[in-house]
Image (cartoon, rainbow, N blue to C red):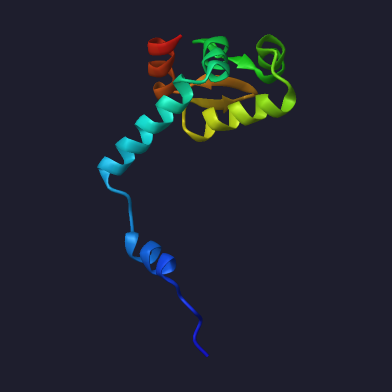
Length: 102
């Protein structure tokens, strides 16, 4: 018995790796999403060049647990922040975004 394969499965099976243009477009989209949100800009500004631990960021940002996790997950997953030894720090991309919007 054969499995039913629809057009979406066929499309994703043929798609393969993303092109450089698609990667650049995705990066620009992520930077726009991070820069237009005031809470994300504030978190980037609070982390700053020296980094901060989670507790201090939560306290200084004034965000509740849900929104803090929501925005931090976005910034971590899209490569603006990294977590090293319990400290949140800006990545190179995060530094360039910080310099342009904070």
